[in-house]
Image (cartoon, rainbow, N blue to C red; front, side, top):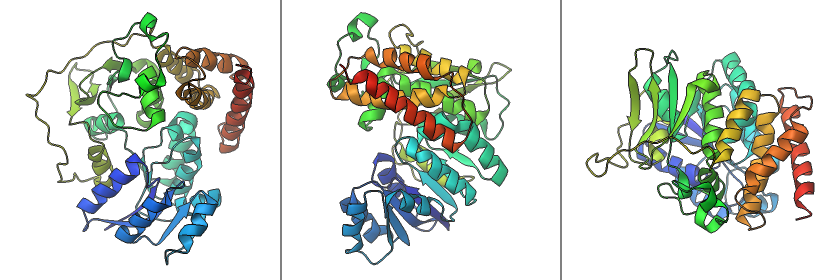
Length: 378
């Protein structure tokens, strides 16, 4: 039986992970859980899955939960890190934001395989993480549907010619640059396929999410950026493809349901036997088209940052996080997002950068300070 530490248990990926675990009571055991502040849902999860310990980042919420349960309830960032450092067969990291990087490194240091759903881990610290994993002999198991698809197609063989990431196109697929000038966050949040949180849904609408996935794929599969393509695939049935040197292409198809890539990661090297969402290929045609880089410049910026390396991906990640929040609150417009990302890159990307957690934190802090000062006068 595999023991699972789940970081981010009350979010969308976390709750679906627990659904998968519940489908395999003979195979998986929840060892520990972490959440930010939703202790009401965490209490229900404790009662159902009986972990050995939990951590709540919000200290006040942790104190309240501690009075309601009999297991250890750790609190704050130190509590999160203590849980992340627990020995287990798999640590699934579904935390949100750059705060997920150091828990990933802690799980690797503990010798755990890491099922990774935290994009920021690889966007900001990809080289660091992959080097640490190789040094400890642990596996990074992708949970994003696109990277899971690539991983399944490759079956451990990394000798392919090209990776083809598919993108739904988000809420604004097919829009021209002129049509996008005055779109709102409310419009951006109407994703045609996936049910996701605010940040990822808006990133999908700007295509920044796909840009982040290019950076992730570069690190996960050791592929240069020039060999990673993007195609808009509106139906979200083909989750990604791999082209080999003989011209053949392998694709992974499934209904858009995150339980499948979660199940693949947790069951590896075996395959699970639960079909959560059957796929009927007769329901709709499958179409593919090239992205419009003029209308969606965030995708181009992400590619440039991947090629540039150093501090650039960290600045990209931090700037996007701040700007998505500003756009969501109606304080900036759609094209202010790429404008201010470029502004931050021009100002900060040339600074000295060391590929360490400390340097990543410092770059993140500098970018936050600079961008917030730029935006304060708006």
